[in-house]
Length: 128
Image (cartoon, rainbow, N blue to C red; front, side, top):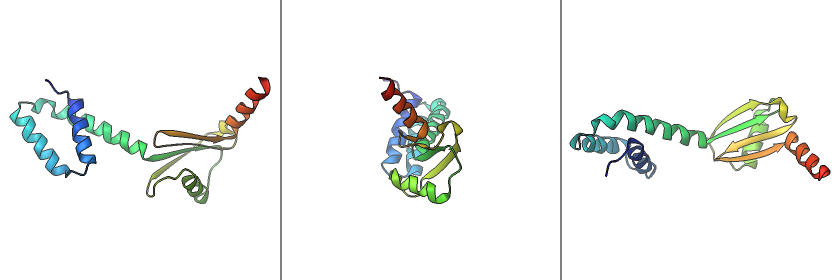
């Protein structure tokens, strides 16, 4: 059975998430690739590992869109409201179309507390 570089990268990433030492894991993979004549897949495995790491980093970043600039205190309130883990990076972006409130994305979930969405929801209820 042929292993793709993507499958190998997923396996290595999973093992690293389980707490196996990255240096040991890298050395073991290198020995395996060398003994199996698979050194040619190493660059693609690395590329897939970088993509997995970037995806993981994005999952652990709090993205906030607001209609107006927010203070550090307001950002902390949003983080508490969403039960964001400590030491998580936050990325705040202005979006004047929101009218007010905020939209946040964290751990693959979207929280929409914007005035724009509330107005659109009310509009739909009034029309139907």
